Amino acid sequence: MHKRLLSISLRSVSIFRIAGQLKKARLVFFSLLFLYSLCGFAQNVKKQRDIRFYKLAFENRTGDLADTLFYSANRPLVWTDFKAQPRTTSSYSAAAFTGFGYTGKIKYSSDTAVIFVRLEVYFVKPFSWVHSYSQTTYALQHEQRHFDITYLITERFKQRLLETELDADYDSIIQYQYIQAYREMNRLQEKYDNETRHGLIESEQQRWQQQVRQWLNEVQKITKAP
Image 1: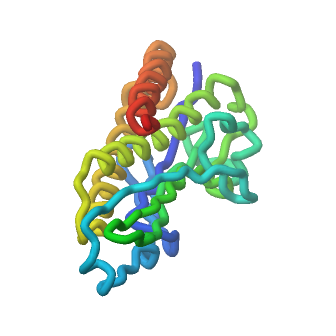
Image 2: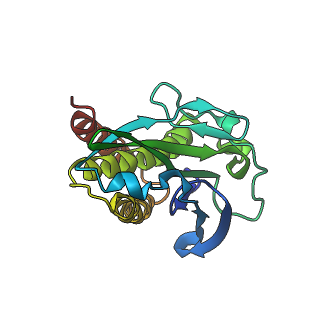
């Protein structure tokens, strides 16, 4: 019998991480809400009067820092990424803190504003923990799917923006879609844990692994299309 697995999502609201608030929810599910600054999209009012077109350009941040791992399909989670001390009083065997945010800048070219959005899907090592007796391949796959779901939501966020007609109020449009995305992320993460019972139901765990892979394939065909 596997011990229940706990994963935590960092819910972001805008651009640069500056503060966090820990909130307790159903089934001892924690979420950390990070606030971001919007300085990346400071607007030039004079130039805006001449702008007729708004275009989006995306990039995904990758890499491995001392305290943060940015999502990459070529760099899955390993147990040594879980740096925090295990919670001895917790009924869960592991906890993974994941989340996503974005930074932005804008460049003008004639009558066109090109909005560059850098997406950051991250796993926070100092907040994530695992008991030594729970470091199994099965348990790690459960935690990896949480990270995958966070990335999936980011790709859906990107897809919605690509389908949205932007105007001079692009900053508010992007923020609105972002808020919708992190709400969707929390709902999907909770659904995943509820249906697998935090990894206890192996048949459901397998179903979710296949479902997440399918969703990723579908959305990436759209967001990576020329």
